[in-house]
Image (cartoon, rainbow, N blue to C red; front, side, top):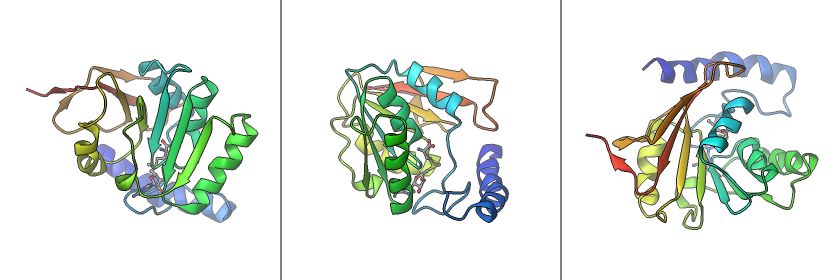
Length: 189
Ligand SMILES: C[S@@+](CC[C@H](N)C(=O)[O-])C[C@H]1O[C@@H](n2cnc3c(N)ncnc32)[C@H](O)[C@@H]1O
């Protein structure tokens, strides 16, 4: 699959260069427990939150929250937001970024495994995960409250019909497509 290839390539190429420049910063392709760190372009994060119609009434979660950008962007829209990230370094960076963005109160981060996280209170999930990760999480998704929105960067949820697919064409590198699902999701025919 070309996009999977792109993911791996970004991991291999982008990563090494960034790491060489500043080892204390995360680098594209930095290993993670179940998926490497590749950031969602800020433009696509905003598009994903638009698609999910995030407001101050929402509780937004990101599983594998990286440097915290989806969570921080949601908090800037007034939502309460929580990132679950396995890598302690990324959790620290996220907290620092949230403080710097002035949303340290609304944007929270925990170090943990996304497959063990309690997502039952989320009204929105904003995710950038591989198809296999999404497949493993699907039984948890199926238990979410009706009306919960899931937006994904780049990869679809196996077997579900996206309610909306959006593509942006500026400042998104290879990650320009987002998918919206609203629970209960429709099965693909
Ligand atoms: C593709 S990156 C996405 C980062 C962020 N969500 C974004 O959109 O910019 C995936 C992230 O998942 C984290 N990760 C990998 N396996 C994990 C696990 N089992 N539990 C929590 N985080 C995990 C990685 O460390 C990485 O930061």
